[in-house]
Image (cartoon, rainbow, N blue to C red; front, side):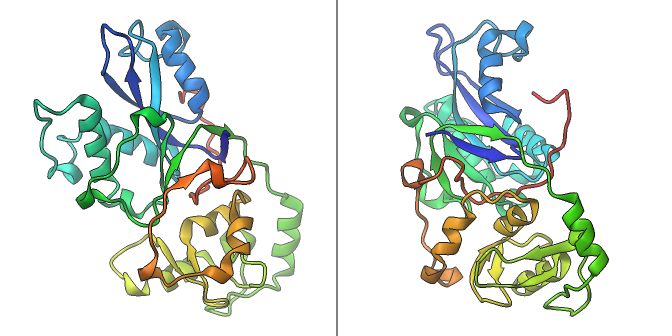
Length: 295
């Protein structure tokens, strides 16, 4: 089953299967994984990279997605490519002689998911090829809000919001923020996605509410809805705001099984358990940035 993701920004790892260059790794950024792997294997004249041209075939084995923008993903890509030049990854030791290139790049990205700002983003680590799958070391487990997924992923065009409805809401101005009690405009409104909850608030007000226990941070990870008191991921709320509903219906129906934040256990997520093809992990869903030169 292929999972479809709206507003896709991902950083991938390629593995070379050519006997002459076998084991070589390439790190890149894409907004369309299916198209990008085809470009790499077709050669530089078809849009592939200089370092991969003429050295294929290549397999896309791992992709990290859920970035809020192309800029955030490109910064992640650069750090993954140059870990010893990044001030955030100065603690990572250089590759040992016994360590393969695949093992080294996996160790690097395992560390990256644990350091800010990337540890605060609602990312997903997705293995595209099961035979290359590697486990996280016990001391390099990613944050609980970063799921581990398996299977193919496809970029999906995000549907445009209904501008007329938003305009009517702004004119009426009847909705008020649950936290500050001031009127809420559509552009700055967040709502809870649980069916029984009617919470409406300013984006900034809810972010401050979530960050009460973490005042030194700017970006929330998760928190308790001030109305229904369910634990919700910040990325899921942004998904709901942007219209990227994905598997939020599944979350809502299972809300009765909600657990306290500190007692939440990590589970590996597989497409086998997703009943709908559009269902994916909780990710940040920003507006689509149309940039023609992106790979």
